[in-house]
Length: 52
Ligand SMILES: [Zn+2]
Ligand SMILES: [Zn+2]
Image 1 (cartoon, rainbow, N blue to C red):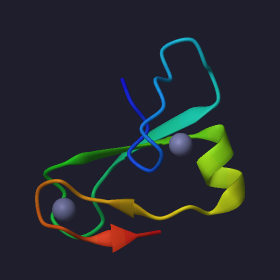
Image 2 (cartoon, rainbow, N blue to C red):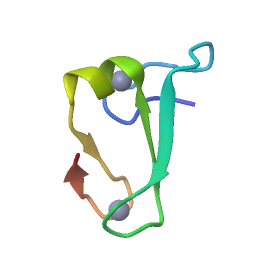
Image 3 (tube, rainbow, N blue to C red):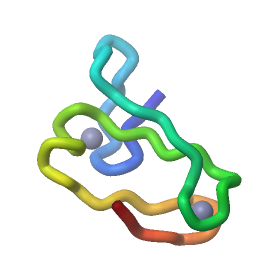
């Protein structure tokens, strides 16, 4: 499992979230704690949507 924003492996971390893409709902977005706090952007691999 990797963070969709920074690409860090979050297998050992517990503070991360997974949610479906707000645009297409097909792709699961994964964000680590750091990227949630920094409000880093993520990109959906399926539709190219860039969030938060
Ligand atoms: Zn991250
Ligand atoms: Zn999408």
